[in-house]
Length: 137
Image (cartoon, rainbow, N blue to C red; front, side, top):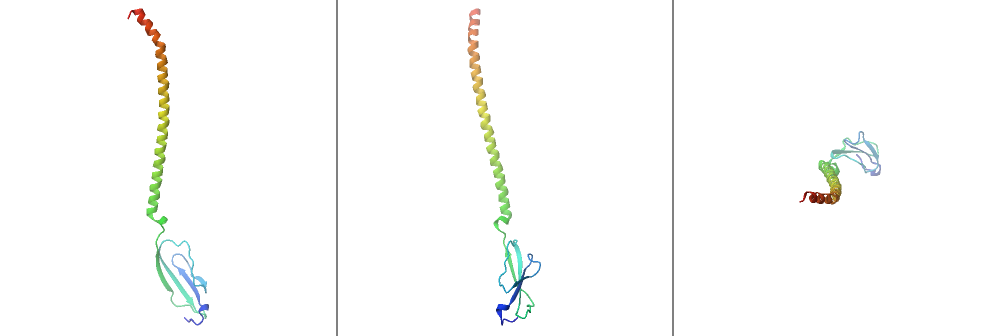
């Protein structure tokens, strides 16, 4: 490798597990990647001088990407827990709502029953008094 004309040095690179073939970067000295999955990766770089003679061995950089928080098992477990708690909260709200309506209907029925019994007993009172008078009680 000759560095007589560094502006003419050409590069190619490859990220194992992401790139199938070598990526020709030309004279650019930067590699761009997006959405690299978490895990262990090996990045390889080869260079060619101004005579287009490629290096015999690639420079190797091994690295590990840790998963983002939303790619972990803990995150999925917390999502499941949140969904279960939300479902339970909706269930409790629904039960309170139904119980509230049940108690309102029950109170109305009791009010109607008391009113009916009061009117019925008032209507029955003169009959009882007449019966007592007839029998001499």
